[in-house]
Image 1 (cartoon, rainbow, N blue to C red):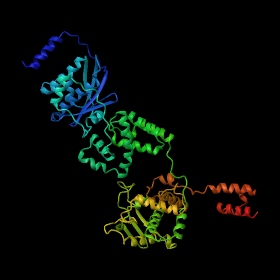
Image 2 (cartoon, rainbow, N blue to C red):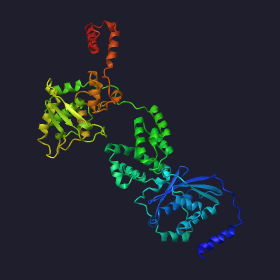
Image 3 (tube, helix red, strand yellow):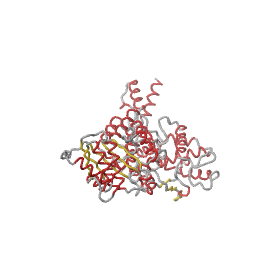
Image 4 (cartoon, one colour):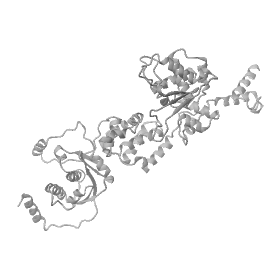
Length: 536
């Protein structure tokens, strides 16, 4: 007779006459557990915990590790309970069978661990029942089990831990709060989240390529704030429920003056790294609707400037250096095409083709609107013979000729810096050039930035009677896009003329109908009235 069998017989002799109530399906606690080859995880009442396997434990079968996860989950969340029933939800049928049958007749180590679990429950008079849960519904515990071990994490050797227990007595693990590491950077945060969500490591980099560098950088702002929030709240940044997300967004609402667009960006960033369908969560959608009313998204500009100011400036100030030639070309291209400066920064010399008297420029790099099934922009610039000083084609040809003298032979990008060492000009550099042109033309750059050229050119085209379809196509919007109507179609900044006419007509005691010509410009009328006042 083995020692194990002997101890079992002794237990039966001591408990054969003990009272055993009929158990009811009324559970005091419901614990979700899961295991991976990385570690174990458990979830209960909106609290999460996890741990990592030792080198010896990693060698054991996954079914055994699932049973071990149940044991650790109980010790974390049920150690304070007495005289009640506990429900364990697990996605491993072997572990479920071992618990409900109170052991295993086939594998000794499974039986010993099952016995250990039931003995722990017996000491607290707990009744344990395990039921199956689908893996996709057990995602919280699954994510906790896949939390990567920090490189700074150390553990005691088994012999050292045994020595400490011998000296100080048995040590039971308490509820392990989720540990929030320091912010690893936007790319690394996304990479880790994809692994935790089940993306194979070999496919992670390809998946990340679906995001542009600017998107990763933009999301990095959100992740930095989210990490700080999780650190203060003692949360795992890769496992956030609806309550955590709403608390975070509300804290941002109280700390900043950001409008709806910023919060929508926060939501998109969190949806990428957190489990669950955050984008379609009805509570979060309701919260975001509230944000849109409290902090509505507003267009940057309610009016725009007249492109004629820029054209007059360039007519009266012909370029006298490579610097002024560079500024003129990028500004004229921005106005003539209505394209984003990011798109224009990607023009290559090898993709510039002459088509009769026109110039064609194909953009083959990825841009903001690039996507599967979407065509890349192809800019067509006609020759403007009526005013050679404003002809984009002539300016472009002159720029290419001058830049060849200082350009590196391997440089294929159109725009290069006018200062040594004449590297490729970034979109930020081109934006500064455009802004300097606006300033020299007398446009208020404290209000209007380089991107306002897109507003000015597309609005001017619309006022000139150009069809909306042509404007959309030229500026890179889709056929059904409402972006132009919502954000770009702006009136000229001439509202002061209305007040001027009202005041002058009041001074002279004349009605608007007495003006010489009802079709005449209000500016002309105002000047005429001022002349009459002056002569009087």
